[in-house]
Length: 115
Length: 113
Image 1: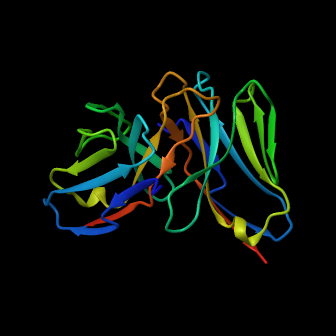
Image 2: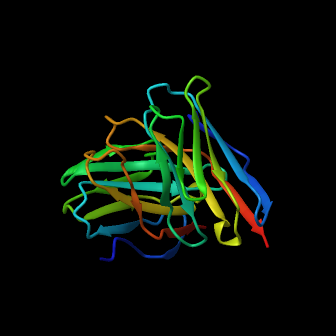
């Protein structure tokens, strides 16, 4: 099993450009998440999905859009990139709440720089 | 508004020492408190977790202490090793909130040989 994979690993954008980050998981998880990680601020939730075809806003959704057309994929889009979106982006997935402990499985991250 | 506050931001410990990282939360409805470990260039991975019905959980050299009345919890790493050098995040969640986690700001731990 590959677990959670993210593409690309690195990307440099100019202000105003758009791009899509792809997250894929092969664990048949229902829930998927997009976070951004900035120094001293931990991980902040951008958007999440509790199942195919459903998405919801997290803590910092502005400037981002998401889609979950297939259960195994969760796409994060930046419509018009801004320097404030320079960050490391992590995707995660988890099964529905069934067990005593809920674990989120993270991908390796995408480092995005917006000039 | 940061609902989970973590301290210190960085920590240097000698090999064999005890590393202690503290977190405080505001929302009394939180009912699941995990710690994640992140090595450079990698995504975070679950290290250990606790629910508020117990005051302590131990797994090997890692222990979570939980104080419900003070709304605080901490991670203790006994006999710290250079391989423990990583960034540690505490988090909290609500069971009925889609497994969403609210993370603390992170602590960068360095264990000196």
